[in-house]
Image (cartoon, rainbow, N blue to C red; front, side, top):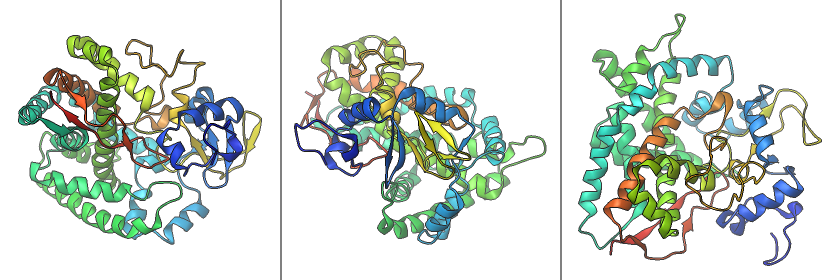
Length: 408
């Protein structure tokens, strides 16, 4: 850990340092400038420049499936249900399995299906904000950003409203151990949540096989390509992935966007007054302070020796891609530390690139475009209770713990 005020040295970078986790941006800058491919004993090779991150995301010499030695080590401590999910989630599988599963999922999870949710999501947001309208204060995270993504994904999957709290609890338990290093103490609770979550998903699938509807689960069951369908484990894992990823990351996107806007009253006014900037505020939040600071999954693993910035990375070595750093790279985004709704964000990597581009990107974007401007319009005098944000201590994610506000 560096002394306050001292020049930062990449050799002393510690991903567990509370100061880094509170504000990673200075360290990102130093890593990009001095050690763009930096080896850390616990994290592996850390890649921080946009060009290199983008390259690895697209390079087929890198996979996401955990090498056998790492998989065996994880299997020795992880409950069976957690291991099953880790071996079937899209985040952790390579071609040809990934190619087949992605093609089948894409048949069901179409842009048209997502866009068709817009009227219903708008109605849900209006109701949610109406319930808060008379409150002198509330919490953006707990009262809006946390429940709304669960409402959206359960609408897409046609899951009962009464199940939302349970789904959120399972999601939190299954993501609690994902850090550097893995929190082994959180694995038993994650296993219990995975067992219950899988039983819940199995009951949903059994019901939809008997009585199909116009919902995403029914579409995933029916998807077929070249005689192939999703296996039972792949189907279970996909349902759980949609519920987990569709909750955690969008919750972070919404709450972080409101934080950034409240800190910039002129930008907040533009968002309230001009409906056309809704996509811009979502894309700039994703770039400026996206939910995932590190590429999802357990990293990238080269299948052969790959040279990155003069560093030879051996097969089976872990490579972690700092998305948050790449999105602040001044060679791609001029004046990157300025929040600008009107910049060209077509090259940000918040959703990844290549084979593993986020399958739920369209849904996350839609949710952000619907809820963020609605909050700013409904509460034009919204203000911080405390302007100092409280961030979850995490290397992988950028997530507010709370954001209390007054309505004026």
